[in-house]
Image (cartoon, rainbow, N blue to C red):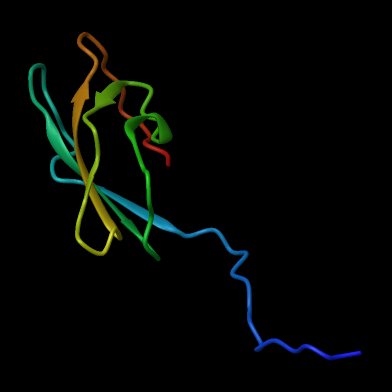
Length: 89
């Protein structure tokens, strides 16, 4: 018989947190703004379908080298006036 051992390890089971900021939060018809999403840890594979913005569309997000800050362009839906919009990841 023989024995085996392994090094100690831990598993991160917490979801990363995100902060969302818009360059301009008061858009008029035809305007766009940059959306910046800052994560608490590196994220891989984020795309526009992972981000919910019911009153507009987002371009494909691009990441910084560390994959902690992602940016995209938000284009609001035409003829919609909503004082309380949300963007969720």
